Length: 126
Image 1 (cartoon, one colour):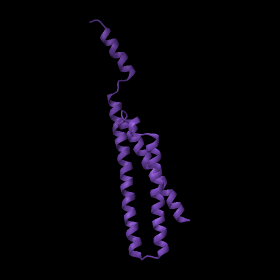
Image 2 (cartoon, rainbow, N blue to C red; image 1 turned 60 degrees about the horizontal axis):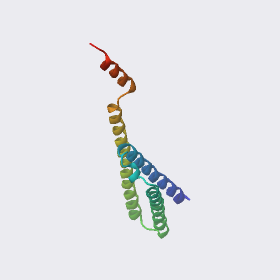
Image 3 (spheres, helix red, strand yellow; image 1 turned 45 degrees about the horizontal axis):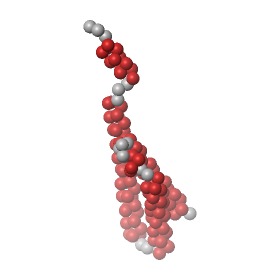
Image 4 (spheres, helix red, strand yellow; image 1 turned 30 degrees about the horizontal axis):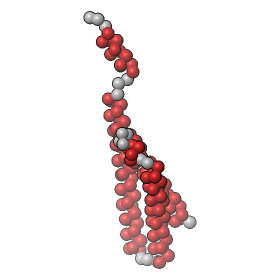
């Protein structure tokens, strides 16, 4: 039962990574968004996420059923922990890039109030 939960947990985490990537592309690369993010590509990435989660869980089940030693099990755990850390950093990277892209966009956009006051200033005769 724990392996099923682990599969769902890992698949959910990988789907969060996909959401972070999609938001990054939508905000930071909005001009190429429709070319990069397609329905077929997203379906493929979701299938890869679920298949990866299933294979990781299946590997753990096989190792447990085979009764391998503590050293092998701990090596697999360390490897998976490094993978988790890398994925968390990748999610953080995507959201940091989104944050800075939105911040840059907010700094460069002209507010309607400012545009109206500038237009009034230009039409004023000195």
